[in-house]
Image (cartoon, helix red, strand yellow):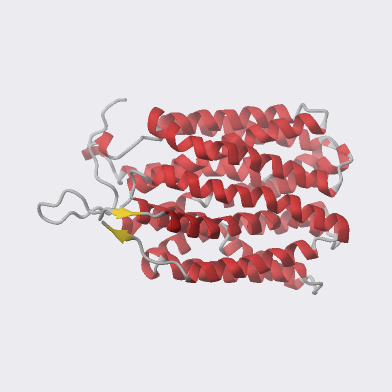
Length: 409
């Protein structure tokens, strides 16, 4: 790699990691996963899918994610974060392009499972990488800005996919998959050019690092116990279980339960994307100020409100409040948990521990769509699914309130 003089850096290179990481999250999660909610109604109609089959498409994506998250930490340590992230993004883009050509549900399931594998292999190293580029007091802010990529993707998909579908006809969803896949391939090349594996490799210190005289490290050595991992993992499991039910089925619920048009439901989903842009920086930065625990309690309380309002048969105006509550905290939990893991484990172990925590989180994502889809199938409505999500979000808030502090060696 060519040497980059510190004298020509206008801003700390950690912020270049953040904006390229934002694009990575935009592609691997925003396009690779959250756009599915906008694609499902047209796919379901074209392929004559039941609610359970539609839920299964989301589930196999999370199975792929689950398979990859444990391996990506060791792979990133062996081959470098940059190489693993770029390869994963390329795989996501190609698998999405091939989905556009698939004629059977089985082939779509296989390909979207591969998409999920790529999502995990890009997301986990990217979230861990930013921890090494930011000091503990700035870590929540750094991860917070990065995760808003998902919000931009939702904003794009909420407008772009209905436009493509209406322009291309009943099979327009196939064109949408091609477009999203092509964008993801482009992002992989941008990350290849920008990402770097560590500040030390560039002769830099982490952003916000202020060593005392004679100090060699600004970060105290901490230990993370199995109990800590299980506690954080349980919180992240509940987040994965609940948020994905809303993300997967809210558009379908608006169309089939409440009679919204696809375009109107897409506008609602775009509002989620627009509002969520501030969620990462605001709540990630807030967690640097008031603590990870208090921030998580606040976030889960707001999410529980969003799910409860979606579950109840209230006037349509309450759906705006539900969408607003979901959007303003949408990506805050991943940013806070990534920073929390960095606090507990330190930057050197962050990828492995965050991979393990994300593995537990992914189990929740697998269970969420499958169970919610089955509940909707039996009740012919998504109200019971959203009510279940609200209850589990309250439990997550209680577990967050019981968090302790990282133990220094």
